[in-house]
Amino acid sequence: MPDYVYLLERRLSPAQRNALTLVRDTARAEGMTSFLTGGAVRDLTSGHPVRDFDVAVQGNALNLRQKLEAAGFTYWGSHAPSQTLFLRYAGGVRLEVSSARKETFAKPAHPTYEWTNILEDLRRRDFTVNAMAISLNEGSFGLLMDPTNGVADLEMRTLRLVSNYGFLEDPIRLLRAVRLSTRLGWLMDERTKQRFDNAMEEGVFSAITNYQRGYELEEIGHEENPLEMLRTFEQQGWMKQLYPAWTVSKADAQGLGQLHELQTRLQIEGIYPDISAAAMELLTARMQPKDIAGLKKLFVRPGFVKEWEKLDKDAEAFAAKLTAKEASVPSVSWKLLTRSAAEPVLWLGLTGKGAAIQNKYKNFFTVWPESRQKVPTALMLEMRITPEIERYPELLEQLFFQTMDNKLNDEAALRAFLEPYSPPAPPPPVNLRKPRAAKKKLAKKEETPKPVKTVAPTQAAAPAEAAAKGKSPVPAKAPAAKIVAKADAKAVTKPDAKALQKPVPAKAVPPAKAAPLKAAPPVKPAAPVKTAAKAPAKVVKPVVKPKAAAPAKKAAPAKKAVAAKKAAPAKKAAGKPAVKKAAAKKPAAKANSAHKAAKKAAPAKKAAAKKAPAKKAAAKKKR
Image 1: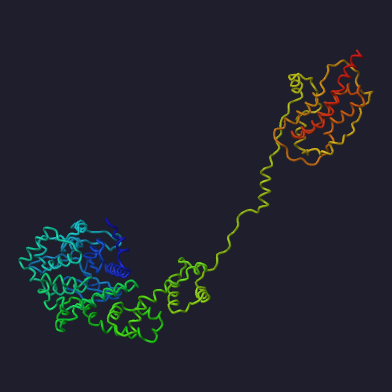
Image 2: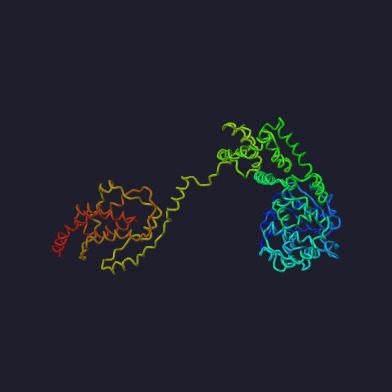
């Protein structure tokens, strides 16, 4: 099922939407509900052009006349028995506003009206495809009412009678069946066609009233292709009963073709004229004046007859404006053509003579529209003029007129014209990023690890550990934990290479203070050095780069080597404690610093190893 709200908003022209809105609001103000019915719903749903509107209100439609005229509608006429108003709205919109009613027929073509609700109104209509309604009321807008299942017949493109006696009760429905079949190309279903033939055989069509005859004759002029409709009626013999003086031979067929072509070109430029009056003039172009006058008397819309009669007068008045001196400017002529009444524009374009008028129409259709292609889109973007700005439609219109009048021939003129519409430049973006220097400092702070205090083994555990490794227990003067803590508190830098090359003179131990020589197990000379080298390895994490410190304590192994050369006997007596003392005082450092210190002590180890046999021999002599 289609979305009827969408159809009402998208399938109708702006003028048609405005007309429906005004009718709905006016009826609501009078306490009436309104519904779009009849052919408009059929054409809206099936995809055919919506030609006119039939609006049913639950109340007396004649009471809406004054307010609708005040809202901008033109009064064309009324039919008091059925409480129907005939109206016209700018933009080629025709409307019938009627009261919802029920019809009963005492004899053919003579109904008796009874005012009722919208559903009963739909059930009294001719064909099911015309017996549908769309609500225009608040709260139910777009709701479809279809009591006779007209949607199914609409999908089948079939005409089916609502009532089985429809042709007998109202014989004018015979002509309406022919009209819809000719216009839409739809066929009657089998039962409807059989009833149609039966009614034609009985000759009930002769019972139609003058009102019905005039209504159907006027509808010929409102058809999209009126000449084709007139030809069909004439061929089937309907015109002999409607109006014998009106035939196809009395029409201007060439002029009707030009009229439809001109209508299409005007619609492209946004002008929507109602061609009914012009078409009627061409359809009766070769009829006698008395026959035309008799035809006009039959029409049920006097307002339509007036528009037909004043076509030439209105066209002459418009021609005077279009050829005036003020209209020599192209933009002024354009405004006259697009903002004047559409029907005089249409009729003057068809019948106007003279080079001045014809050139204006030629330029309007071919030359002036090219100015729309000269819009400086790139320059407008450069000046920040986009469709989002408030005055953009006004700018395009003014730019179109200025270009049409050849007033913007260079870029300087364009910039000067566009400057008032150019919005100010946006402020520079705010940089929320931190400075690069501060970012580097922050990275350094994050990379620097915090010092971790390690727990060194106690003094009691040290001898046990040494004994387990097969080494002699060496007492340490200071616990290893204090050494590590001191290294953490005072950072120690790597010793300078030049400082390590220069040996620091060590204080010689006085011979008087040396302990008496006793037999002792031979000690491997490399053991003290290994113990000293292992001490810094217990620090797990690297220490912060230390501040500058004196590298004097790093040269302890070098002091021992010098002292050993000068006093061999004293060195033997106090060798091991001295090594232990040096190892105990050696601060904790990084693993690479210990490795360098071990390399520096390598000559001292070799010297001690060479003198080891001499020491053994001296010991044997003493024994």
